[in-house]
Image (cartoon, rainbow, N blue to C red; front, top):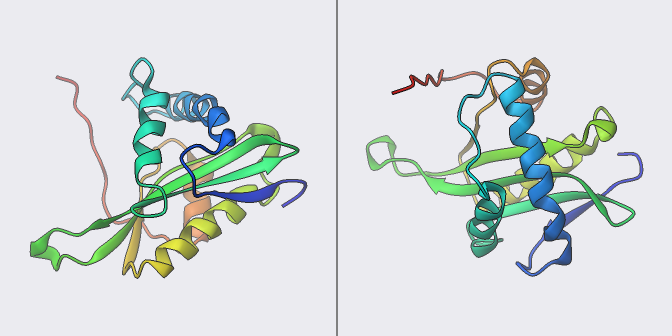
Length: 159
């Protein structure tokens, strides 16, 4: 990982968090460009961040890639329970990953994702799930390189 360092957010008042909403908006713009139809709500990035803050290190982990005080990437995941009819086991839910374009292919995504997956392991999850926008072939390749295999397709039908 050239130039950036891994920063695990443990405090909801971490000053670096002020930089995350812009990256979250960039993530959603990228997902839309790859075919995701669900649009981010007005102030959606800030709403998401407030929710993530509340469960930091208990139910969720936010990992940042930081270069000279600037956040250049983030990933987020949380622990959830499988439905009782599937055994109720703890599962990791890897929900977000974004790295600014100029830092891609440098090891940043892998480094912050490994920090998230280490936390999942510490929490005793039996498996981790993630979703990738169907048109983002590079993301699909990346998650496969981490040992993920396709399991389900998610479809959306406008009302």
